[in-house]
Length: 251
Length: 277
Ligand SMILES: Nc1ncnc2c1ncn2[C@@H]1O[C@H](COP(=O)(O)OP(=O)(O)OP(=O)(O)O)[C@@H](O)[C@H]1O
Ligand SMILES: [Mg+2]
Image (cartoon, rainbow over all chains, first blue to last red; front, top):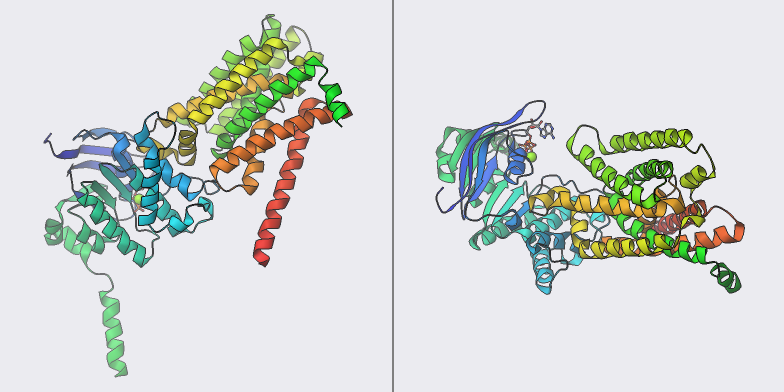
């Protein structure tokens, strides 16, 4: 495996009891890449994430980690948390728990851990919520809290499953800036997103899944490819035409 | 009032019972917060039934009760986690299976050996006379272990309870911490069971956590609140049972219920007042 390859997936397949979710998926992620995974609902994107995290084992094929990547250097934002709705934890407690994996067996948080949690809460604009109860936040505020937790855990790899779902336009914009800036700090990013237009501006590579991988390559290749062209068609074109017609009619 | 307390504590068996009981309630409350939040409230109930079965075995073979029941209950806790994690039998069903089986085995063994007598009644509903000197030493040691481990692993327990798959994904050995919680629960249950009764001991796990969650908004405050209310309820329950000659275990549970209702009331009142403001 080349020295700068972080993850190498070869022929990975996974099926639930009912049906196959992934079939024959192969791709490489290099250090410093920003890979965006796209595809329709139910195309296996979240399943791929859980496989990459080692939460499930692929039924066939292999996932190799290079560059000395260990699980406790990974930050992760799940699409849906297993976290219960009625959990009594403050935002600060949740964000701090992201620092835990890097601590090994040491029992208590250091000043450095607290500073890191504060910094990430600041970055995501939730400092004023620090002492609020997680269960009493809005959906978007909860999403930001979990993002801050993911960033606290991130050292070399960040996996985001639909990070902008539920965020307002300003927060979405901020998040993309944030992703760019942590990529400049040398963190590799794998992101699932339906916001394809923005994603291709902030990603370096695209993996298009439909149970099987139907495209894997750089963003430029994707834009030029038939798959990409079909998927990238700006949807509201017809609606805009309609509106223009209406405007003409009024004039 | 003070005269009653002084009179109470002139009985050495009562002093022993209160020491053991306070330590057990403290441990049960701490573990309970995590168990309740993980939807594992019934694990205490299941394990205490297994404890009943193992006490029956101990009586039948004339062995020391704790020496027999601790290993059996710890193994049962291990099995419970295994079954509910790996197979299609879900947590609650696995617990129901285990607890009814243990109860049935216990009852059959008892009827074949000593027959149904007051001992059996004591196992089921608890007896304050059950604690001897070695129980006190053992419970002080175990409580020290439970409290130390809980404090050392507090942040990990929080993380694993809040979001197990995140913890796992980021390299925290969640399975090991689940096992730790189950083991500590097993020890706490076996210790407290003979005093509180096999049918009532799981109240010490569930009530303090639920009471704390009525009013507290962070994991830390819920944990502290649960620990304090649990110890206070136990003490009031014992004093009450002394004054009115009621069974100890049941009295402690009644105090817990009362406090839970009071906390519910306060929480409803707070919400109302906030809505008015
Ligand atoms: N726990 C599960 N048990 C059984 N089948 C599942 C489970 N989770 C997902 N699936 C199935 O696996 C397939 C892939 O699901 P997955 O969640 O990976 O899709 P996705 O690409 O993340 O979709 P979305 O865009 O809606 O998030 C789907 O057909 C789904 O029905
Ligand atoms: Mg998904």
